[in-house]
Length: 114
Length: 116
Image (cartoon, rainbow over the protein chains, first blue to last red):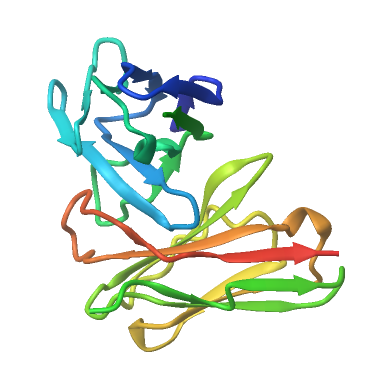
C-alpha cells in the first residue's frame, strides 16, 4: 500500500536558518505529492504540490522537488521566519481516478525562535 | 465564499455513547473526505464521497463508524458506542472532484472529540 515517511521531530531553528524536512514515499503507480501546513489554531492548508517526476513545487519561499529515483519530496526553505512555526505534513495521492484521498506522513513540528 | 465548516468544534462524550459530527463542504464541491488526526496514528483517511457514486469506505476503522452525505452536500460522520481510542480530531475536506486529478483539498477546522 501507499505510505509516507517523514523525519522525526520536533525541529527548532533560529530565524534565518536553512530548513530541510525529509519526506520519502512508497506508492504504486505515479502519485502526486503534497506538503500541507497547520499553523497554530488554524486548519490544515496546502503549502505546495508536484504532480510528476522532476516537478518543483514552491510557495512562500518553500520548495520541494519530486524525485522519483529516490522516492523523495524533501521540503526546503533558505531562511525561515518565526511565522513559519507550524506542523508540516508530507502527503501523496493516487494519480488515477477522481478519488484523490491523501495518505499523510506523521507530521513534524517546526519552531522558529527569534 | 465560506470555507469548509464543521460542527461542533469540540465534543466531549462518555464511553459507550453515540456521536454525530457534521461537515458543510464548500458550495459546488462534489467531493468530500473525512480524515482523523490522532496522536498515535497521525492523519488517516476515513471515507470519501463523490456525487452519487458509492462512497469509498476503505478507511473506516470499524463498523461502529459510518457516514452519510445527504443531497450531495452536508455530511455527517457517526460513531456508535464510542471508545476512548476514538478520541481524535476529525477533519473534513472537500474539492471540486469530477475527475480532475489531484486538485487541492480544502480542509475544515475539525471537530475535537474526547471520549471519557
